[in-house]
Image 1: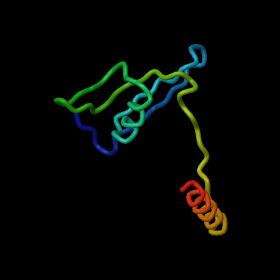
Image 2: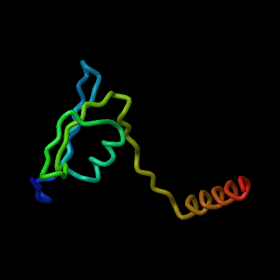
Image 3: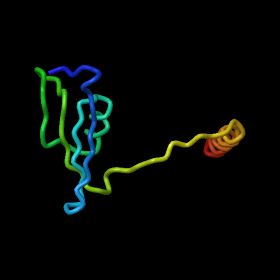
Image 4: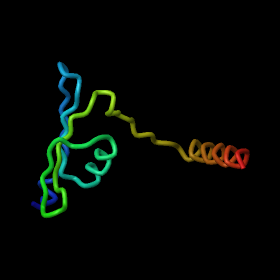
Length: 90
């Protein structure tokens, strides 16, 4: 089954008692990342193509990251630092 853009979603529900995440996704970009973490316990297929899947993951397998917003000055400093580190390693 193909999902329309309005129907596509990824849901993450944390079970505090079992200390695990229950994740459902029908967004291919998210499913690709989840497949790298573990195998799903349920899949919905359209022919050979997986259109949705569900995972149970341990609490430590999911991370939250803040979006970093760098100023032009900070970006320039990081670029210079990376350039120096790369030159030293070669």
